[in-house]
Length: 468
Ligand SMILES: NC(=O)c1ccc[n+]([C@@H]2O[C@H](COP(=O)([O-])OP(=O)(O)OC[C@H]3O[C@@H](n4cnc5c(N)ncnc54)[C@H](O)[C@@H]3O)[C@@H](O)[C@H]2O)c1
Image 1 (tube, helix red, strand yellow):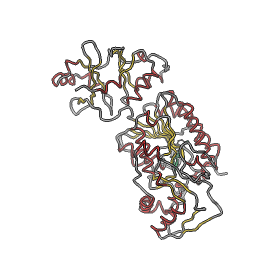
Image 2 (cartoon, rainbow, N blue to C red):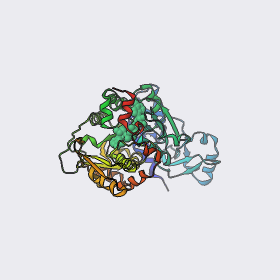
Image 3 (cartoon, protein in one colour):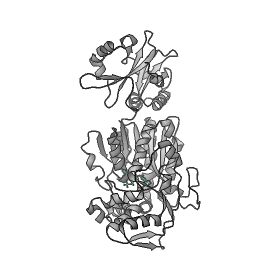
Image 4 (cartoon, rainbow, N blue to C red):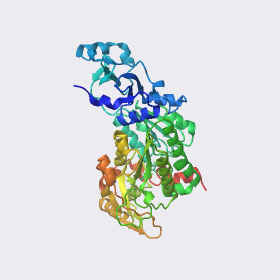
Protein backbone atom coordinates (compact mmCIF):
# COMPACT_ATOMS: atom_id res chain seq x y z
CA UNK A 1 0.00 0.00 0.00
CA UNK A 2 1.34 3.42 -0.88
CA UNK A 3 1.94 5.91 1.88
CA UNK A 4 0.49 9.29 0.99
CA UNK A 5 2.46 10.98 3.77
CA UNK A 6 5.25 11.60 1.31
CA UNK A 7 3.20 14.27 -0.47
CA UNK A 8 3.53 16.58 2.54
CA UNK A 9 7.30 16.42 2.20
CA UNK A 10 7.52 17.38 -1.46
CA UNK A 11 8.58 20.91 -2.27
CA UNK A 12 9.70 22.62 -5.47
CA UNK A 13 13.49 22.43 -5.73
CA UNK A 14 13.70 26.12 -6.67
CA UNK A 15 12.14 27.35 -3.41
CA UNK A 16 14.05 29.40 -0.85
CA UNK A 17 15.09 28.24 2.60
CA UNK A 18 12.22 30.27 4.07
CA UNK A 19 9.63 28.59 1.83
CA UNK A 20 11.00 25.12 2.48
CA UNK A 21 10.99 25.75 6.23
CA UNK A 22 7.27 26.50 6.02
CA UNK A 23 6.72 23.10 4.38
CA UNK A 24 8.70 21.46 7.17
CA UNK A 25 6.75 23.30 9.88
CA UNK A 26 3.47 22.24 8.29
CA UNK A 27 4.35 18.59 7.72
CA UNK A 28 5.77 18.20 11.21
CA UNK A 29 8.35 15.69 9.99
CA UNK A 30 11.46 17.92 10.12
CA UNK A 31 12.31 17.01 6.51
CA UNK A 32 11.50 18.11 2.95
CA UNK A 33 12.21 16.44 -0.39
CA UNK A 34 13.26 18.90 -3.09
CA UNK A 35 11.69 17.80 -6.38
CA UNK A 36 10.89 19.12 -9.85
CA UNK A 37 7.41 19.40 -11.34
CA UNK A 38 7.28 15.65 -11.99
CA UNK A 39 8.30 14.83 -8.41
CA UNK A 40 11.81 13.79 -9.47
CA UNK A 41 14.04 13.96 -6.40
CA UNK A 42 17.01 16.35 -6.40
CA UNK A 43 17.89 16.64 -2.72
CA UNK A 44 16.69 16.28 0.86
CA UNK A 45 16.83 18.93 3.55
CA UNK A 46 16.06 18.90 7.27
CA UNK A 47 15.21 21.64 9.76
CA UNK A 48 18.58 20.95 11.37
CA UNK A 49 20.36 21.66 8.04
CA UNK A 50 18.46 24.93 7.78
CA UNK A 51 19.14 26.12 11.34
CA UNK A 52 22.80 25.25 11.13
CA UNK A 53 23.13 27.10 7.78
CA UNK A 54 21.43 30.19 9.22
CA UNK A 55 23.78 30.28 12.20
CA UNK A 56 26.64 30.08 9.69
CA UNK A 57 25.38 33.23 8.00
CA UNK A 58 23.10 31.84 5.26
CA UNK A 59 20.11 34.04 4.38
CA UNK A 60 16.50 32.88 4.37
CA UNK A 61 16.15 33.93 0.73
CA UNK A 62 18.92 31.59 -0.40
CA UNK A 63 17.70 28.74 -2.65
CA UNK A 64 17.31 25.68 -0.42
CA UNK A 65 19.19 23.54 -2.98
CA UNK A 66 22.40 25.32 -2.00
CA UNK A 67 22.42 23.77 1.47
CA UNK A 68 20.44 20.57 0.86
CA UNK A 69 21.86 17.04 0.83
CA UNK A 70 22.18 16.03 -2.83
CA UNK A 71 23.25 12.46 -2.10
CA UNK A 72 20.63 11.37 0.42
CA UNK A 73 19.68 7.82 1.37
CA UNK A 74 16.96 6.61 -1.03
CA UNK A 75 15.51 3.25 -1.95
CA UNK A 76 14.47 2.06 -5.39
CA UNK A 77 10.96 0.67 -5.76
CA UNK A 78 12.47 -2.68 -6.84
CA UNK A 79 14.25 -2.95 -3.47
CA UNK A 80 11.00 -2.16 -1.67
CA UNK A 81 10.28 -5.81 -0.91
CA UNK A 82 10.89 -7.82 2.29
CA UNK A 83 14.23 -9.18 1.08
CA UNK A 84 15.30 -5.92 -0.58
CA UNK A 85 14.62 -3.94 2.57
CA UNK A 86 16.55 -6.45 4.70
CA UNK A 87 19.65 -5.93 2.52
CA UNK A 88 19.10 -2.20 2.51
CA UNK A 89 18.98 -2.08 6.32
CA UNK A 90 22.15 -4.14 6.64
CA UNK A 91 24.00 -1.36 4.82
CA UNK A 92 25.97 0.32 7.63
CA UNK A 93 25.71 3.72 5.95
CA UNK A 94 21.96 3.68 6.55
CA UNK A 95 22.34 3.12 10.32
CA UNK A 96 24.87 5.94 10.60
CA UNK A 97 22.40 8.41 9.18
CA UNK A 98 19.47 7.73 11.53
CA UNK A 99 19.04 10.77 13.78
CA UNK A 100 18.84 10.30 17.57
CA UNK A 101 15.25 10.34 18.95
CA UNK A 102 13.79 10.43 15.47
CA UNK A 103 13.61 8.61 12.16
CA UNK A 104 15.41 8.77 8.83
CA UNK A 105 12.88 9.61 6.14
CA UNK A 106 13.72 7.60 3.03
CA UNK A 107 11.96 8.32 -0.24
CA UNK A 108 11.08 5.34 -2.42
CA UNK A 109 11.98 6.22 -6.02
CA UNK A 110 11.00 4.75 -9.36
CA UNK A 111 13.56 4.28 -12.14
CA UNK A 112 13.16 7.95 -13.17
CA UNK A 113 13.96 9.01 -9.55
CA UNK A 114 10.36 10.13 -9.02
CA UNK A 115 9.23 9.95 -5.39
CA UNK A 116 6.43 7.37 -5.11
CA UNK A 117 6.44 6.40 -1.44
CA UNK A 118 8.06 7.06 1.93
CA UNK A 119 9.66 4.86 4.56
CA UNK A 120 10.64 5.77 8.12
CA UNK A 121 13.72 4.08 9.56
CA UNK A 122 14.31 3.95 13.31
CA UNK A 123 17.40 2.62 15.03
CA UNK A 124 16.68 -0.89 16.35
CA UNK A 125 18.42 -3.28 18.75
CA UNK A 126 20.72 -4.89 16.16
CA UNK A 127 19.59 -3.61 12.79
CA UNK A 128 17.37 -0.60 12.16
CA UNK A 129 13.60 -1.04 11.90
CA UNK A 130 11.54 0.23 9.04
CA UNK A 131 7.95 1.39 9.03
CA UNK A 132 5.45 3.08 6.76
CA UNK A 133 3.93 5.01 9.63
CA UNK A 134 5.86 7.41 11.78
CA UNK A 135 5.52 7.26 15.58
CA UNK A 136 4.37 10.84 16.01
CA UNK A 137 5.10 14.29 14.70
CA UNK A 138 8.84 14.41 14.74
CA UNK A 139 9.68 18.02 14.22
CA UNK A 140 10.00 18.66 17.95
CA UNK A 141 12.53 16.54 19.75
CA UNK A 142 14.02 19.04 22.16
CA UNK A 143 12.20 21.92 23.82
CA UNK A 144 13.72 24.92 25.56
CA UNK A 145 11.75 25.96 28.64
CA UNK A 146 12.87 29.42 29.73
CA UNK A 147 11.95 29.85 33.39
CA UNK A 148 11.59 26.06 33.60
CA UNK A 149 12.62 25.88 37.27
CA UNK A 150 9.58 27.90 38.35
CA UNK A 151 6.18 26.95 39.75
CA UNK A 152 4.62 26.25 36.34
CA UNK A 153 7.90 25.49 34.53
CA UNK A 154 8.81 22.55 36.73
CA UNK A 155 5.42 20.92 35.97
CA UNK A 156 5.82 21.60 32.25
CA UNK A 157 9.31 20.03 32.24
CA UNK A 158 8.15 16.91 34.09
CA UNK A 159 5.28 16.41 31.67
CA UNK A 160 7.46 16.96 28.60
CA UNK A 161 9.98 14.38 29.81
CA UNK A 162 7.18 11.89 30.54
CA UNK A 163 5.92 12.39 26.99
CA UNK A 164 9.31 11.57 25.46
CA UNK A 165 10.65 15.04 24.68
CA UNK A 166 14.16 16.17 25.53
CA UNK A 167 14.07 19.29 27.66
CA UNK A 168 16.52 22.11 28.16
CA UNK A 169 15.84 24.61 30.94
CA UNK A 170 17.28 28.11 31.00
CA UNK A 171 16.70 29.66 34.42
CA UNK A 172 18.65 31.86 36.82
CA UNK A 173 17.21 29.95 39.80
CA UNK A 174 15.74 32.98 41.52
CA UNK A 175 13.99 30.58 43.92
CA UNK A 176 16.57 27.79 43.93
CA UNK A 177 16.37 24.50 42.12
CA UNK A 178 13.67 22.55 44.05
CA UNK A 179 11.56 22.61 40.91
CA UNK A 180 13.99 20.65 38.75
CA UNK A 181 16.11 18.70 41.25
CA UNK A 182 14.18 15.48 40.65
CA UNK A 183 14.96 15.45 36.93
CA UNK A 184 18.69 16.24 37.11
CA UNK A 185 19.59 12.60 36.47
CA UNK A 186 17.30 12.20 33.47
CA UNK A 187 19.39 11.73 30.32
CA UNK A 188 16.89 13.79 28.32
CA UNK A 189 17.19 16.77 30.64
CA UNK A 190 19.70 19.58 30.38
CA UNK A 191 20.00 22.63 32.61
CA UNK A 192 21.55 25.94 31.67
CA UNK A 193 21.98 28.26 34.63
CA UNK A 194 21.77 31.71 33.12
CA UNK A 195 19.92 34.97 32.72
CA UNK A 196 17.52 35.48 29.84
CA UNK A 197 18.73 39.08 29.66
CA UNK A 198 22.04 37.85 28.25
CA UNK A 199 22.02 37.51 24.45
CA UNK A 200 24.83 35.00 24.11
CA UNK A 201 23.17 32.84 26.78
CA UNK A 202 20.02 32.83 24.65
CA UNK A 203 21.96 31.91 21.51
CA UNK A 204 23.55 28.97 23.34
CA UNK A 205 20.19 27.93 24.76
CA UNK A 206 18.33 27.76 21.44
CA UNK A 207 21.12 25.99 19.54
CA UNK A 208 19.69 22.48 19.36
CA UNK A 209 15.98 22.94 20.14
CA UNK A 210 12.96 22.97 17.86
CA UNK A 211 10.48 24.82 20.10
CA UNK A 212 10.59 27.38 22.89
CA UNK A 213 8.25 27.80 25.85
CA UNK A 214 8.85 31.18 27.48
CA UNK A 215 7.82 31.34 31.15
CA UNK A 216 10.63 33.43 32.64
CA UNK A 217 9.36 36.56 34.30
CA UNK A 218 9.05 38.55 37.45
CA UNK A 219 5.63 37.20 38.32
CA UNK A 220 2.74 38.90 40.08
CA UNK A 221 1.64 42.51 40.54
CA UNK A 222 3.48 43.30 43.82
CA UNK A 223 6.75 41.64 42.72
CA UNK A 224 6.77 43.66 39.49
CA UNK A 225 5.84 46.90 41.24
CA UNK A 226 8.80 46.48 43.61
CA UNK A 227 11.36 46.56 40.81
CA UNK A 228 9.93 48.12 37.64
CA UNK A 229 13.27 48.35 35.77
CA UNK A 230 14.03 44.66 36.26
CA UNK A 231 10.44 43.80 35.35
CA UNK A 232 10.58 45.72 32.08
CA UNK A 233 13.95 44.16 31.22
CA UNK A 234 12.86 40.57 31.88
CA UNK A 235 9.15 40.57 31.11
CA UNK A 236 9.33 42.67 27.98
CA UNK A 237 12.78 43.40 26.48
CA UNK A 238 14.16 39.90 27.03
CA UNK A 239 11.15 38.19 25.49
CA UNK A 240 11.48 40.46 22.46
CA UNK A 241 15.14 39.53 22.02
CA UNK A 242 14.44 35.84 22.63
CA UNK A 243 11.64 35.85 20.07
CA UNK A 244 13.77 37.75 17.52
CA UNK A 245 16.54 35.19 17.89
CA UNK A 246 14.06 32.31 17.50
CA UNK A 247 12.55 33.93 14.42
CA UNK A 248 16.00 34.46 12.91
CA UNK A 249 16.90 30.84 13.62
CA UNK A 250 13.59 29.52 12.29
CA UNK A 251 12.43 28.14 15.61
CA UNK A 252 8.89 28.92 14.67
CA UNK A 253 6.99 27.35 17.56
CA UNK A 254 7.15 29.85 20.37
CA UNK A 255 4.72 29.66 23.28
CA UNK A 256 4.50 32.64 25.57
CA UNK A 257 2.90 32.71 29.03
CA UNK A 258 0.67 35.75 29.27
CA UNK A 259 -2.10 36.26 31.78
CA UNK A 260 -5.84 36.88 32.05
CA UNK A 261 -4.79 39.84 34.22
CA UNK A 262 -4.71 41.80 30.95
CA UNK A 263 -8.53 41.98 31.29
CA UNK A 264 -7.90 43.76 34.60
CA UNK A 265 -10.67 45.73 36.25
CA UNK A 266 -13.55 44.69 34.07
CA UNK A 267 -17.07 45.93 34.63
CA UNK A 268 -18.44 43.53 32.03
CA UNK A 269 -20.66 40.90 33.67
CA UNK A 270 -20.31 38.61 30.65
CA UNK A 271 -17.53 36.09 30.08
CA UNK A 272 -14.59 37.87 28.46
CA UNK A 273 -13.16 36.38 25.31
CA UNK A 274 -9.95 37.08 23.41
CA UNK A 275 -11.55 40.07 21.64
CA UNK A 276 -12.94 41.68 24.79
CA UNK A 277 -11.74 45.04 26.04
CA UNK A 278 -8.42 44.97 27.89
CA UNK A 279 -7.99 46.94 31.05
CA UNK A 280 -4.68 46.11 32.76
CA UNK A 281 -4.26 47.62 36.22
CA UNK A 282 -0.61 46.80 36.98
CA UNK A 283 2.87 46.96 35.49
CA UNK A 284 2.81 43.15 35.38
CA UNK A 285 -0.28 43.12 33.14
CA UNK A 286 0.95 46.13 31.11
CA UNK A 287 4.19 44.31 30.30
CA UNK A 288 2.38 41.09 29.36
CA UNK A 289 0.15 43.05 27.00
CA UNK A 290 3.07 44.96 25.48
CA UNK A 291 4.90 41.66 24.92
CA UNK A 292 1.84 40.02 23.35
CA UNK A 293 1.79 42.89 20.86
CA UNK A 294 5.49 42.60 20.07
CA UNK A 295 5.11 38.87 19.39
CA UNK A 296 2.10 39.31 17.14
CA UNK A 297 3.84 42.16 15.28
CA UNK A 298 6.94 40.11 14.47
CA UNK A 299 5.02 36.98 13.49
CA UNK A 300 5.14 36.15 9.80
CA UNK A 301 4.35 33.22 7.50
CA UNK A 302 6.95 31.11 9.35
CA UNK A 303 7.37 32.46 12.89
CA UNK A 304 4.08 31.51 14.57
CA UNK A 305 3.91 32.44 18.24
CA UNK A 306 1.15 31.14 20.49
CA UNK A 307 0.15 33.33 23.40
CA UNK A 308 -1.52 31.75 26.40
CA UNK A 309 -3.55 34.08 28.58
CA UNK A 310 -3.62 32.01 31.74
CA UNK A 311 -5.91 32.15 34.75
CA UNK A 312 -4.51 32.27 38.28
CA UNK A 313 -2.86 28.94 38.96
CA UNK A 314 -3.20 26.77 42.04
CA UNK A 315 -2.02 23.40 43.32
CA UNK A 316 1.15 21.57 44.23
CA UNK A 317 4.38 21.92 42.28
CA UNK A 318 7.98 20.99 43.12
CA UNK A 319 8.68 24.75 43.33
CA UNK A 320 5.79 25.91 45.51
CA UNK A 321 4.25 29.38 45.46
CA UNK A 322 2.07 30.56 48.34
CA UNK A 323 1.45 34.05 46.96
CA UNK A 324 -1.34 32.71 44.73
CA UNK A 325 -4.74 33.13 46.31
CA UNK A 326 -5.89 29.50 46.56
CA UNK A 327 -2.46 28.32 47.70
CA UNK A 328 -2.18 31.07 50.32
CA UNK A 329 -5.63 30.46 51.77
CA UNK A 330 -4.96 26.72 51.86
CA UNK A 331 -1.65 27.26 53.66
CA UNK A 332 -3.32 29.54 56.21
CA UNK A 333 -5.97 26.91 56.88
CA UNK A 334 -3.35 24.15 57.07
CA UNK A 335 -1.54 26.19 59.74
CA UNK A 336 -4.79 26.64 61.73
CA UNK A 337 -4.90 30.34 60.95
CA UNK A 338 -7.96 32.28 59.83
CA UNK A 339 -8.11 32.61 56.08
CA UNK A 340 -7.95 36.23 54.95
CA UNK A 341 -9.93 37.44 51.99
CA UNK A 342 -9.45 40.89 50.48
CA UNK A 343 -12.89 41.98 49.33
CA UNK A 344 -14.14 38.67 48.04
CA UNK A 345 -16.67 39.68 45.42
CA UNK A 346 -14.14 39.79 42.58
CA UNK A 347 -14.45 37.16 39.86
CA UNK A 348 -11.32 35.30 38.83
CA UNK A 349 -10.65 32.26 36.63
CA UNK A 350 -8.42 29.49 38.01
CA UNK A 351 -6.61 26.45 36.69
CA UNK A 352 -4.51 23.82 38.39
CA UNK A 353 -0.81 24.11 37.59
CA UNK A 354 -0.70 20.57 36.14
CA UNK A 355 -3.70 21.23 33.91
CA UNK A 356 -2.03 24.43 32.73
CA UNK A 357 1.15 22.45 31.96
CA UNK A 358 -0.92 20.08 29.83
CA UNK A 359 -1.83 22.96 27.49
CA UNK A 360 1.86 23.69 26.84
CA UNK A 361 2.62 20.06 25.98
CA UNK A 362 -0.46 19.74 23.78
CA UNK A 363 0.49 22.95 21.96
CA UNK A 364 3.61 21.20 20.70
CA UNK A 365 1.53 18.32 19.41
CA UNK A 366 -1.11 20.32 17.55
CA UNK A 367 -0.38 21.44 13.97
CA UNK A 368 1.32 24.81 13.80
CA UNK A 369 -1.48 26.17 11.58
CA UNK A 370 -3.98 25.37 14.35
CA UNK A 371 -2.25 27.12 17.23
CA UNK A 372 0.29 29.46 15.59
CA UNK A 373 -0.22 33.26 15.51
CA UNK A 374 -2.96 33.02 18.11
CA UNK A 375 -3.79 34.61 21.42
CA UNK A 376 -5.77 32.12 23.50
CA UNK A 377 -7.41 32.15 26.90
CA UNK A 378 -6.33 28.74 28.20
CA UNK A 379 -8.37 27.12 30.91
CA UNK A 380 -11.92 26.04 31.50
CA UNK A 381 -15.04 28.18 31.52
CA UNK A 382 -16.39 26.25 34.54
CA UNK A 383 -13.44 27.42 36.63
CA UNK A 384 -14.54 31.06 37.15
CA UNK A 385 -15.13 31.80 40.84
CA UNK A 386 -15.63 34.71 43.20
CA UNK A 387 -12.80 34.82 45.74
CA UNK A 388 -15.31 34.37 48.56
CA UNK A 389 -16.53 31.15 46.92
CA UNK A 390 -12.95 29.87 46.99
CA UNK A 391 -12.67 30.75 50.67
CA UNK A 392 -15.92 28.90 51.37
CA UNK A 393 -14.68 25.76 49.56
CA UNK A 394 -11.50 25.81 51.68
CA UNK A 395 -13.54 26.48 54.84
CA UNK A 396 -15.71 23.45 54.07
CA UNK A 397 -12.65 21.21 53.71
CA UNK A 398 -10.64 22.53 56.66
CA UNK A 399 -13.22 24.21 58.98
CA UNK A 400 -11.07 27.37 58.98
CA UNK A 401 -12.61 30.75 59.84
CA UNK A 402 -12.76 33.44 57.19
CA UNK A 403 -11.62 37.05 57.87
CA UNK A 404 -12.83 39.53 55.29
CA UNK A 405 -10.67 42.62 54.84
CA UNK A 406 -12.49 45.37 52.92
CA UNK A 407 -9.59 47.84 53.21
CA UNK A 408 -7.16 46.34 50.68
CA UNK A 409 -9.25 45.12 47.77
CA UNK A 410 -7.55 43.73 44.67
CA UNK A 411 -9.04 45.71 41.76
CA UNK A 412 -8.85 42.83 39.29
CA UNK A 413 -12.25 41.42 38.40
CA UNK A 414 -12.87 39.24 35.36
CA UNK A 415 -14.78 36.15 34.28
CA UNK A 416 -13.21 34.52 31.28
CA UNK A 417 -14.50 32.56 28.30
CA UNK A 418 -12.18 29.65 27.46
CA UNK A 419 -14.33 28.10 24.73
CA UNK A 420 -11.79 28.68 21.94
CA UNK A 421 -8.95 26.83 23.70
CA UNK A 422 -11.40 24.18 24.95
CA UNK A 423 -12.36 23.52 21.34
CA UNK A 424 -8.82 23.56 19.94
CA UNK A 425 -7.15 21.56 22.72
CA UNK A 426 -9.95 19.33 23.99
CA UNK A 427 -8.43 19.44 27.48
CA UNK A 428 -10.77 18.91 30.41
CA UNK A 429 -9.18 19.96 33.72
CA UNK A 430 -8.25 17.02 35.96
CA UNK A 431 -8.32 19.16 39.09
CA UNK A 432 -11.22 21.17 40.46
CA UNK A 433 -10.61 23.53 43.41
CA UNK A 434 -11.47 20.93 46.03
CA UNK A 435 -9.12 18.31 44.61
CA UNK A 436 -6.30 20.87 44.32
CA UNK A 437 -6.79 22.07 47.91
CA UNK A 438 -6.79 18.50 49.25
CA UNK A 439 -3.64 17.79 47.22
CA UNK A 440 -1.88 20.79 48.81
CA UNK A 441 -2.93 19.78 52.31
CA UNK A 442 -0.87 16.63 51.73
CA UNK A 443 2.41 18.16 50.57
CA UNK A 444 5.57 18.18 52.69
CA UNK A 445 4.51 19.58 56.11
CA UNK A 446 7.71 21.63 56.45
CA UNK A 447 7.01 23.43 53.18
CA UNK A 448 3.45 24.39 54.05
CA UNK A 449 4.47 25.43 57.62
CA UNK A 450 7.05 27.74 56.08
CA UNK A 451 4.56 29.27 53.63
CA UNK A 452 5.56 32.86 54.47
CA UNK A 453 9.20 32.31 53.42
CA UNK A 454 10.46 34.42 50.50
CA UNK A 455 11.21 31.13 48.72
CA UNK A 456 7.48 30.77 48.11
CA UNK A 457 6.48 34.45 47.77
CA UNK A 458 7.66 36.33 44.72
CA UNK A 459 7.43 39.87 46.10
CA UNK A 460 9.38 38.95 49.24
CA UNK A 461 12.14 37.44 47.11
CA UNK A 462 12.33 40.66 45.06
CA UNK A 463 12.54 42.67 48.28
CA UNK A 464 15.33 40.42 49.55
CA UNK A 465 17.26 40.64 46.26
CA UNK A 466 16.95 44.41 45.97
CA UNK A 467 15.89 46.12 49.19
CA UNK A 468 14.54 49.65 48.70
N1 LIG B 1 1.27 31.38 38.38
C1 LIG B 1 0.23 32.00 37.84
O1 LIG B 1 -0.87 32.08 38.42
C2 LIG B 1 0.35 32.58 36.46
C3 LIG B 1 -0.81 33.06 35.84
C4 LIG B 1 -0.73 33.62 34.58
C5 LIG B 1 0.50 33.69 33.95
N2 LIG B 1 1.62 33.21 34.56
C6 LIG B 1 2.90 33.30 33.86
O2 LIG B 1 3.49 32.00 33.82
C7 LIG B 1 4.91 32.12 33.86
C8 LIG B 1 5.46 31.25 34.98
O3 LIG B 1 4.94 31.69 36.23
P1 LIG B 1 5.23 30.93 37.58
O4 LIG B 1 4.03 31.02 38.42
O5 LIG B 1 5.83 29.61 37.28
O6 LIG B 1 6.33 31.90 38.24
P2 LIG B 1 7.73 31.59 38.93
O7 LIG B 1 8.16 32.87 39.57
O8 LIG B 1 7.62 30.39 39.80
O9 LIG B 1 8.67 31.22 37.72
C9 LIG B 1 9.43 32.13 36.98
C10 LIG B 1 10.76 31.47 36.68
O10 LIG B 1 11.48 32.35 35.82
C11 LIG B 1 12.83 32.40 36.28
N3 LIG B 1 13.40 33.68 35.89
C12 LIG B 1 12.99 34.92 36.28
N4 LIG B 1 13.80 35.85 35.75
C13 LIG B 1 14.71 35.19 35.00
C14 LIG B 1 15.82 35.62 34.22
N5 LIG B 1 16.15 36.91 34.13
N6 LIG B 1 16.55 34.70 33.57
C15 LIG B 1 16.24 33.37 33.69
N7 LIG B 1 15.22 32.91 34.43
C16 LIG B 1 14.46 33.82 35.08
C17 LIG B 1 12.72 32.24 37.80
O11 LIG B 1 13.95 31.83 38.38
C18 LIG B 1 11.60 31.24 37.92
O12 LIG B 1 12.12 29.93 37.95
C19 LIG B 1 5.21 33.60 34.03
O13 LIG B 1 5.51 34.16 32.79
C20 LIG B 1 3.91 34.16 34.56
O14 LIG B 1 3.76 35.52 34.23
C21 LIG B 1 1.56 32.65 35.81
